[in-house]
Amino acid sequence: MGISLKNKPLVEAIFEMRWEIPELKQGISTDTNYKILIGTLFQNVKEKFSFIETLPASSIPDQLSNYLVQYRYRSSKDKWPLIQIGPGIITYNDTEGYTWEGFQSGISYLAENFFSVYPEIAKINISDVKIRYIDSIEFDYESSNILEFLNDKLKTNIKLSCDLFEGTQVDKQPLALDINSVFRTEKPPGIISLRFARGKRSEKDILLWETTVQSIRDDAPKNREDILAWLEKAHWLADDWFFKLIEGDLHKRFE
Image (cartoon, rainbow, N blue to C red):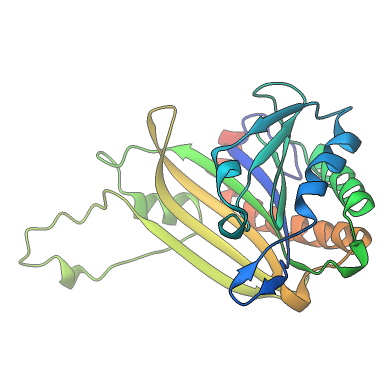
């Protein structure tokens, strides 16, 4: 992430921003500016993101599609990074080619263009901003104990009482897990969450871990300048946790 790792475990880095969708009448909320935004934003970013990918959610009726990504803008087919957009939501995503400098620059570019073309920008209310890092490492759940791995390699001690297994004929070795912890933060104001789960990548079993920094409602930055300032703090925190978690054997493995 912040420090360059030759064999970094990153699966995907995601910046996501959401804005409030007004209620037009009771029970029906629609972003009336969204249809205009799709075209005007594309016109502004097509020099770098000239390929439009239409997603299945684009066929869902407007009143049911709030906060569902409907389109992707890429430089060409299947290329990363990419922009995703839907009613009330926009994201910037990168994968193996990620660098912090490139990610930061891409989000700055996206924010500049978004705030310059969104109709009635003075009325928009940003309600949710987050960055999420998804990392993974291959793990054999049949031959190794994932809880021991978390304790030994990722500074995370999760322990079940031995009493649970006595007299039950239940194997103490977990075949899977899905654990999510959430903590309040001050800089930036909001939360940080850490999730560990079993997953698959390229048909191989993996340990998946996600680090998310998020600010919502009044804590969310409201304009481009505040978003970029927020991004610096959020990245620093996610980066700090990542390198503290992998300190030791895993850091050497990823170098």
